[in-house]
Length: 314
Ligand code: NAD
Image 1: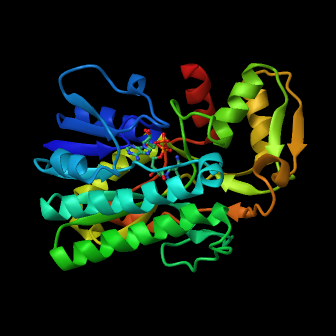
Image 2 (image 1 turned 180 degrees about the vertical axis):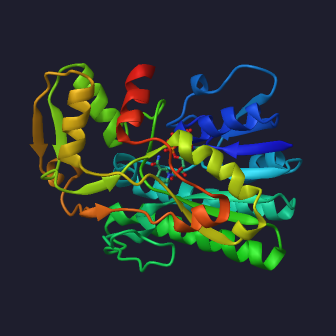
């Protein structure tokens, strides 16, 4: 099979490429290397990097034309990118996805869209199911533009798939972490690990009581390809993530302990970190019952395993 992975030089995308290659597939990566890196990709004949943007409609069409399956992960990610470059981020996350979906449908290639737990916004229910209500702040706050765009991406993929009959799976990632994720764009775990390893203060944004579940990239990547092989998943949005809940202050403590660091924890108000008007959610926890029902998904890696996999790779 010839698989196209947009955003394949990024964190999740590059692990997906490794997995696809290990299964004997030929992989073509379309990536502009804005947050990804060619170093993330394995060397060899089974992978080709096309450096370019998903905003380039003709390029997208030519890359997807002869493909058997498309995994769309290219996106403007990270709170800093979204807040600092709202227009560019919006265009990549809306127009870029439209180009990829239209080409996949045109060439009848089944496609997967990477979405996010951000679509649930401030809903802090105990285990968010895929049909949970969305509680978003004002669309004029750029902080919510990522969630708004990803919601439209889901709809675009779903409607195109329904009308054309070309299979589509939407995957909602919940704070996926692991080796190769960079802390440069605001991702909390790699940022804390870098600070802890340097024995510098670990900077917690807000008061640190906000709670999250972190999922391992090694759990979710095989699940992505499995979902694409599962007709019952077509036309569905499926949560993927871990189950171990931790406060952000607790995360800082765990990372300090596991790295034997002497770092202190310091607290930075949201407005100093992201500017005024930033809103966060107190809790974000997935219900992964649908993924379990569809493909037997069960996360194998806990938070300590994930932190160790990151520190071992440094
Ligand atoms: P990442 O930044 O490592 O990957 C994104 C990739 O897209 C990068 O390689 C980047 O260079 C590329 N890219 C950005 N703009 C592009 C453009 N215009 N054209 C082509 N390539 C472009 O981030 P990631 O964490 O691996 O995220 C992958 C996908 O998963 C994204 O769609 C993201 O929204 C989604 N997601 C990730 C998480 C997570 O916890 N990591 C959570 C929710 C959703």
